[in-house]
Image 1: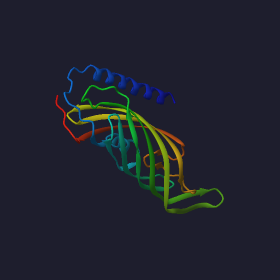
Image 2: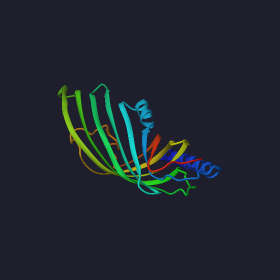
Image 3: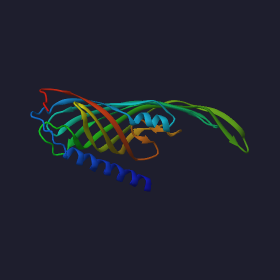
Image 4: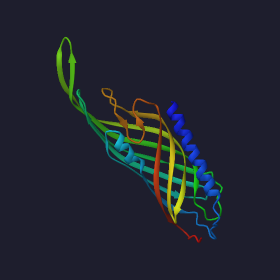
Length: 227
């Protein structure tokens, strides 16, 4: 819990520094183009692949500006889990999808597109898992072996997110988001808990806190900007 608080304080400190740097800009756009399509790639998924027994882990996002401070958002990803120990071999694969909206809270100069935002998302994941080469050792019955067949599972959750996006170059952005996920419902294998719920986190938790760090490219719609 202490490490979690330290991480949250660190991200808040970074956010404050970014807001200060954005406020200090002296160049002002002469025209405004609010609408646009924002394509994103979550770079933090590659970090998860290095730290967990997760393979083929990626996440993409698609945002569409519907007003000056409102954006519709869709996110989706995929992952595989594959590991073995002395008692069993475990495999899992699945996709996940999130749909929702974001609201920008940063007061911007005309033509600026940086954001500090809050969002609300609905998340859904269909996934499968199975276990093979299960070995059970008992002092009376001895050693037994078996397997659990491929099982289909689902999960539904609500996600509250907050973060920022900063334009590094014309229509090229970087940003991060802090996410609070609340499990709502799902169909889970009663014989074996899944290692992860794709897009949510550990399956034995009803809440999950995560962070994403992404790079974005914006496709303007309905106008152009001049600097």
